[in-house]
Length: 283
Image (cartoon, rainbow, N blue to C red; front, side):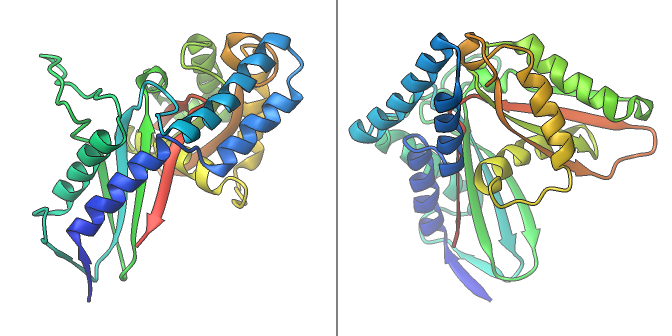
């Protein structure tokens, strides 16, 4: 059996949450740089260059790269041969929540989490959304994702009849981006979840965003052709960076699938704005 300190997990969550508020993943930064270099529309190019300058300022000053520091989602993959040591936090969820609260204090992150009815602010960006999956072995992986609600509000779910096929899926995704237009701060990164149940499709879409940012340059996706189809057609909409036109409405697309029922075809869309903030660590 392997022993892991809950206090250490709290510290790692806090570190990841602060890091992603200042630094974007290398793939995301490269995609933004390529878009700026290749953009032919003057205002869109200026907008992209402002984003790149903003990233430098965030790192120089230690101030968050976006004023909406987001609502945090934490994905935990945990081996079944791990014992947690309650050397501060009492359990795993408490360790995660204390890590997010600590990052909010130390990283000067805007408190953005409120009760859905009273709208009373919790003051420290807790509770974060936590997804836990149990695996065989002794591995422990933490992924922290922060999303502002400009982009989270652009999420969509459709319970489609299977008869619509890929053509119907593609139309739903593209129509959703067309409807959102520039409201979620393009250029976008797009995660799509296909299959399972409604909640599974939404989780797949969010996991697709994580994979896109952290593995996009290495991943040999069997679905690459379909991803490229969607990317090409969205970029033909002409929304462009900041809504100023051009061919950089979406910079990358990732599609994740899961088996579903014979009578259904759940499809979920999860957009990230240009500030696609995610990081991962394996303890």
